[in-house]
Image (cartoon, rainbow, N blue to C red; front, side):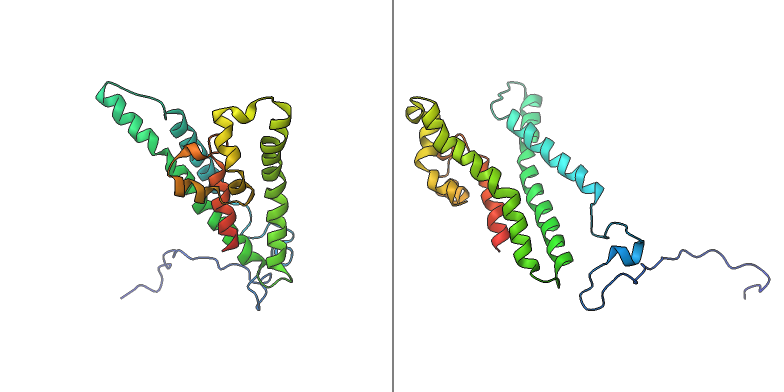
Amino acid sequence: MTDPTRPMPAVATRTLPDTAGIDAGTGAHDARAAGGGKEPWRGHIPALDGVRGLAIVLVMISHVTLGLRADVRFDRELIEVVRSGWMGVDLFFVLSGFLITGILLDARGRPHYFRNFYIRRTLRIFPLYYGILAAVFIAMPLLVPGVREQAWFAGAHENRAWFWTYTSNVLLAREGTWEATPILGGFWSLAVEEQFYLL
Protein backbone atom coordinates (compact mmCIF):
# COMPACT_ATOMS: atom_id res chain seq x y z
CA MET A 1 0.00 0.00 0.00
CA THR A 2 1.31 3.43 -0.91
CA ASP A 3 1.76 6.23 1.57
CA PRO A 4 -0.54 9.11 0.55
CA THR A 5 1.81 11.65 2.15
CA ARG A 6 4.75 10.69 -0.07
CA PRO A 7 5.06 12.61 -3.30
CA MET A 8 4.49 10.63 -6.49
CA PRO A 9 7.69 9.73 -8.39
CA ALA A 10 8.39 11.66 -11.55
CA VAL A 11 7.05 9.88 -14.61
CA ALA A 12 8.56 10.37 -18.04
CA THR A 13 6.03 12.04 -20.24
CA ARG A 14 5.97 12.75 -23.92
CA THR A 15 4.82 16.12 -25.15
CA LEU A 16 2.44 15.81 -28.05
CA PRO A 17 3.05 18.11 -30.99
CA ASP A 18 0.96 21.23 -31.30
CA THR A 19 -1.71 20.37 -33.83
CA ALA A 20 -2.79 23.95 -34.42
CA GLY A 21 -0.87 24.13 -37.64
CA ILE A 22 -1.89 20.76 -39.09
CA ASP A 23 -4.58 20.75 -41.73
CA ALA A 24 -7.10 18.02 -40.87
CA GLY A 25 -7.79 17.21 -44.51
CA THR A 26 -4.25 16.76 -45.77
CA GLY A 27 -2.14 16.35 -42.65
CA ALA A 28 0.07 19.12 -44.02
CA HIS A 29 1.88 21.18 -41.42
CA ASP A 30 1.47 24.92 -41.57
CA ALA A 31 4.60 26.21 -39.85
CA ARG A 32 3.26 29.76 -39.55
CA ALA A 33 0.20 28.71 -37.58
CA ALA A 34 1.95 26.24 -35.28
CA GLY A 35 5.34 27.77 -34.66
CA GLY A 36 5.18 31.44 -35.39
CA GLY A 37 7.09 31.24 -38.67
CA LYS A 38 9.40 28.34 -37.81
CA GLU A 39 10.53 25.78 -40.38
CA PRO A 40 8.14 22.90 -41.25
CA TRP A 41 8.68 19.74 -39.24
CA ARG A 42 9.88 17.89 -42.34
CA GLY A 43 12.35 20.59 -43.30
CA HIS A 44 16.12 20.33 -43.21
CA ILE A 45 17.39 17.36 -41.18
CA PRO A 46 21.00 18.16 -40.17
CA ALA A 47 21.89 14.52 -39.44
CA LEU A 48 21.33 13.70 -43.11
CA ASP A 49 24.14 16.10 -44.03
CA GLY A 50 26.48 13.78 -42.13
CA VAL A 51 25.07 10.76 -43.96
CA ARG A 52 25.56 12.55 -47.27
CA GLY A 53 29.14 13.44 -46.32
CA LEU A 54 29.84 9.82 -45.37
CA ALA A 55 28.49 8.64 -48.73
CA ILE A 56 30.73 11.13 -50.57
CA VAL A 57 33.83 10.02 -48.66
CA LEU A 58 33.05 6.33 -49.27
CA VAL A 59 32.70 6.84 -53.01
CA MET A 60 35.82 9.02 -53.28
CA ILE A 61 38.00 6.56 -51.35
CA SER A 62 36.65 3.70 -53.42
CA HIS A 63 37.60 5.50 -56.66
CA VAL A 64 41.06 6.42 -55.39
CA THR A 65 41.89 2.78 -54.62
CA LEU A 66 40.68 1.34 -57.95
CA GLY A 67 44.19 0.92 -59.39
CA LEU A 68 45.99 -0.07 -56.21
CA ARG A 69 47.73 -3.43 -55.85
CA ALA A 70 49.31 -4.84 -52.70
CA ASP A 71 51.68 -7.69 -51.88
CA VAL A 72 51.15 -7.78 -48.13
CA ARG A 73 48.01 -9.56 -46.90
CA PHE A 74 47.01 -6.72 -44.54
CA ASP A 75 47.25 -4.21 -47.38
CA ARG A 76 45.17 -6.43 -49.65
CA GLU A 77 42.48 -6.79 -46.98
CA LEU A 78 42.48 -3.05 -46.31
CA ILE A 79 42.10 -2.28 -50.00
CA GLU A 80 39.18 -4.72 -50.25
CA VAL A 81 37.45 -3.05 -47.31
CA VAL A 82 37.99 0.42 -48.76
CA ARG A 83 36.71 -0.69 -52.15
CA SER A 84 33.36 -1.44 -50.56
CA GLY A 85 32.89 2.33 -50.73
CA TRP A 86 30.67 1.72 -53.77
CA MET A 87 27.94 1.32 -51.13
CA GLY A 88 28.08 5.10 -50.79
CA VAL A 89 26.24 5.33 -54.11
CA ASP A 90 23.51 3.06 -52.76
CA LEU A 91 23.37 5.27 -49.69
CA PHE A 92 22.84 8.29 -51.96
CA PHE A 93 19.96 6.53 -53.71
CA VAL A 94 18.28 5.62 -50.41
CA LEU A 95 18.76 9.17 -49.13
CA SER A 96 17.36 10.64 -52.35
CA GLY A 97 14.36 8.33 -52.20
CA PHE A 98 13.67 9.35 -48.61
CA LEU A 99 14.00 13.08 -49.30
CA ILE A 100 11.99 13.04 -52.53
CA THR A 101 9.22 11.01 -50.91
CA GLY A 102 9.18 13.53 -48.04
CA ILE A 103 8.89 16.43 -50.48
CA LEU A 104 5.98 14.75 -52.27
CA LEU A 105 4.20 13.88 -49.02
CA ASP A 106 4.58 17.45 -47.75
CA ALA A 107 3.18 18.88 -50.98
CA ARG A 108 0.31 16.38 -51.26
CA GLY A 109 -3.03 18.14 -51.38
CA ARG A 110 -1.69 21.38 -52.79
CA PRO A 111 -2.87 22.40 -56.25
CA HIS A 112 -0.69 21.00 -59.04
CA TYR A 113 1.81 19.55 -56.55
CA PHE A 114 2.91 16.79 -58.92
CA ARG A 115 3.42 19.15 -61.85
CA ASN A 116 5.29 21.64 -59.64
CA PHE A 117 7.54 18.86 -58.36
CA TYR A 118 8.56 17.87 -61.90
CA ILE A 119 9.08 21.48 -62.95
CA ARG A 120 11.41 22.09 -59.98
CA ARG A 121 13.35 18.88 -60.64
CA THR A 122 13.67 19.72 -64.34
CA LEU A 123 14.93 23.25 -63.68
CA ARG A 124 17.38 21.96 -61.10
CA ILE A 125 18.91 19.07 -63.08
CA PHE A 126 18.40 19.50 -66.83
CA PRO A 127 20.34 22.74 -67.50
CA LEU A 128 23.60 21.50 -65.99
CA TYR A 129 23.19 17.92 -67.26
CA TYR A 130 22.47 18.92 -70.86
CA GLY A 131 25.00 21.75 -70.66
CA ILE A 132 27.76 19.24 -69.93
CA LEU A 133 26.55 16.96 -72.74
CA ALA A 134 26.54 19.90 -75.16
CA ALA A 135 30.07 20.85 -74.09
CA VAL A 136 31.34 17.28 -74.55
CA PHE A 137 29.47 16.19 -77.68
CA ILE A 138 29.06 19.50 -79.55
CA ALA A 139 31.68 22.02 -78.39
CA MET A 140 34.61 19.66 -77.79
CA PRO A 141 34.67 18.22 -81.36
CA LEU A 142 34.53 21.78 -82.74
CA LEU A 143 37.25 23.17 -80.46
CA VAL A 144 39.64 20.23 -80.11
CA PRO A 145 40.90 18.95 -83.47
CA GLY A 146 41.10 15.17 -83.78
CA VAL A 147 39.25 14.49 -80.55
CA ARG A 148 36.77 12.15 -82.28
CA GLU A 149 39.62 9.77 -83.10
CA GLN A 150 40.76 9.56 -79.46
CA ALA A 151 39.79 6.26 -77.81
CA TRP A 152 38.69 7.96 -74.56
CA PHE A 153 36.21 10.10 -76.52
CA ALA A 154 35.08 7.75 -79.29
CA GLY A 155 33.21 5.28 -77.05
CA ALA A 156 31.10 7.94 -75.39
CA HIS A 157 30.54 9.81 -78.65
CA GLU A 158 29.19 6.80 -80.52
CA ASN A 159 26.88 6.05 -77.56
CA ARG A 160 25.78 9.66 -77.07
CA ALA A 161 22.07 8.90 -77.67
CA TRP A 162 22.05 6.93 -74.40
CA PHE A 163 23.19 10.05 -72.54
CA TRP A 164 20.75 12.43 -74.21
CA THR A 165 17.87 10.12 -73.19
CA TYR A 166 19.00 9.49 -69.59
CA THR A 167 19.51 5.77 -70.28
CA SER A 168 23.28 5.38 -69.97
CA ASN A 169 22.69 2.98 -67.06
CA VAL A 170 20.89 0.65 -69.48
CA LEU A 171 23.87 0.86 -71.84
CA LEU A 172 26.28 -0.04 -69.03
CA ALA A 173 24.11 -2.99 -67.98
CA ARG A 174 23.88 -4.19 -71.58
CA GLU A 175 27.60 -3.86 -72.32
CA GLY A 176 28.78 -4.97 -68.89
CA THR A 177 31.79 -2.66 -69.02
CA TRP A 178 32.71 0.93 -68.14
CA GLU A 179 34.44 1.21 -71.52
CA ALA A 180 31.07 2.04 -73.08
CA THR A 181 31.05 5.40 -71.27
CA PRO A 182 34.70 6.29 -70.57
CA ILE A 183 34.48 10.05 -70.03
CA LEU A 184 30.94 10.24 -68.64
CA GLY A 185 30.92 7.08 -66.54
CA GLY A 186 29.30 8.72 -63.51
CA PHE A 187 26.26 9.79 -65.50
CA TRP A 188 24.67 6.36 -65.02
CA SER A 189 23.68 7.38 -61.47
CA LEU A 190 21.93 10.50 -62.78
CA ALA A 191 20.03 8.28 -65.22
CA VAL A 192 18.92 6.01 -62.38
CA GLU A 193 17.76 8.98 -60.32
CA GLU A 194 15.82 10.46 -63.24
CA GLN A 195 14.12 7.12 -63.82
CA PHE A 196 13.25 7.01 -60.12
CA TYR A 197 11.48 10.37 -60.50
CA LEU A 198 9.39 8.95 -63.32
CA LEU A 199 8.22 6.10 -61.12
